[in-house]
Length: 439
Ligand code: SF4
Image (cartoon, rainbow, N blue to C red):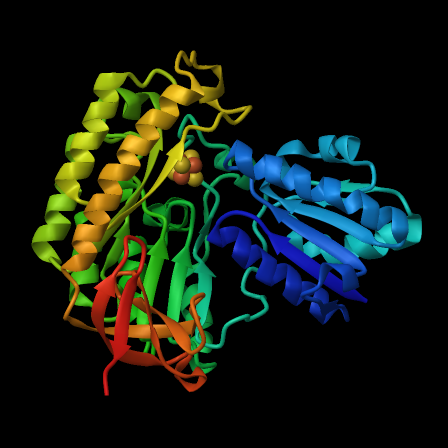
């Protein structure tokens, strides 16, 4: 039996898909890259933005034809939208066979067996729980790996659905993480990315419930001491939990990438309060200033939401000012997306989509100009990149990631993939660099 898996959304979902593939392959199924050759189709879904849900609905709608031609085809929908909508998904799409949640991924092989023997549609959603098998996953890359360290989120930012679909924070025991990373390194992994909705609050539950003296900066330090591990990344940070200690740990340890993704969301204190972010623009700037002072070469990227309910011209102006002051290397900018069930979905919103789009484009214009200017400063300099694969443009064009998380394209050959190489930056675009392999 073949299965096909399609992933929507963030790195945590990508990792969950690696777990699903592992589980199914250990139960005798074979992964197929071709949806038309699959006996089981799995959609691992995202609920963060309305657009992602609409895309998913379009994708599930397209499966109806396939199912009518092949009634034995099993359609499974998991992930955050499944956790959020539960039986509603079965009502909207009666031809879905299995809906499974974010807390019961490891049950999927069992659910498939049950579906085959009972022939009833199944909706299996647990409301909470950690998963003992968190580090059983299929490796799609020989040299890179995601390592979840904390699952769930306690923050309840007023616009965000994640705490409702991923549950409360549960940190993985530090010994388990270290053991897992050591094994990855022995298997040839050069770069890991520590994952969590808020990695900076790692360990709080372990300290209060199990009296384990650990926090994120200590974990980072311990992981950076693992021999042979060339690069450590982490995502995502939360400014309210981003301690000075983390900055000093990054500074002192060479194998921790000098890149920090620090979501700002808004430059207006009034809006930050309505978002329940629990920091002010000034506190955010204080972190940035310390990063700039202690690690001058560190790149800083961010997320910004435009058009949050109640955002007026002055709030937006404050966001633009902060963007100009910080000069982010890159920013992921979004127009506010209403998520049913969140606090902000009850907020009065007096701005039209057209007005929001005008603000969004203004922000994009300013940020793109800054990104290009920052990229230009790299021209003529030499950087070490981890070669990740082929770039999208042209034959023999490789794609490498700099320590600062920028992508560079350069000529090379297949044998360079999975290795660290030095390149010289020769040109730049807004979103990527062009380089030349150094001899
Ligand atoms: S920190 Fe806020 S935005 Fe991030 S996952 Fe938690 S609730 Fe959502």
